[in-house]
Image (cartoon, rainbow, N blue to C red; front, side, top):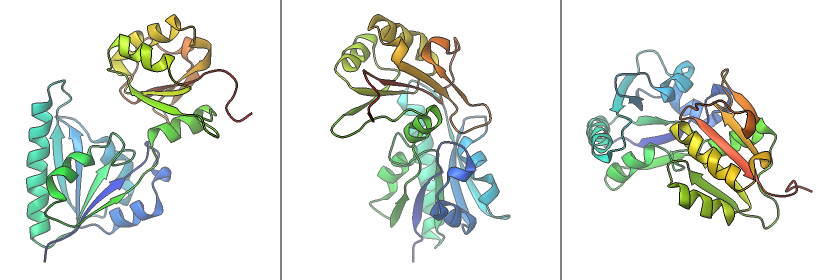
Length: 233
């Protein structure tokens, strides 16, 4: 009988923000899979390290950070094949995913490859948006207001148009796009209403007004923008 695949959300980085279910599944796993930067370490594994049982088999998927999709897709193909072998052998596999598996999560690529053949359960996690809002003390929406989530790599004109038509905005994957995003927000006269959050919940966390943000940002950074009055008033 084939094993079961679990896609487990780990939250934004602080191990204490893992759910009880996530921790229990990881601690009881005999096979754990996770993505890692090609040639580097795995942020997902670092979050879950304290819960992984000694002797657990670890399936590492080296995923290159590249604009081209083909290298990453090939890495997920290889990872899915190794996970399938473990499942066919009767082992359950717990796949670690930063944040939430279905919110910009890496697990969705494995889900697409394996869910048609194996039993799969997705365990939700605390999203980076929830973590950044909490750490910034910035409620995002209330009543009938709308939250718009935008990825930083969008073209400048599209970012401007979408921010103009939004009420509350979360801009993710800021990274090397910080200068462009900052320019768009400044051009719309909204800098004073924007807050920058970097590495939310981690020891290296930075939370500050966008005007005081550093010149360079890591991938794990976000800009929150709420127009007008505080949404909870």
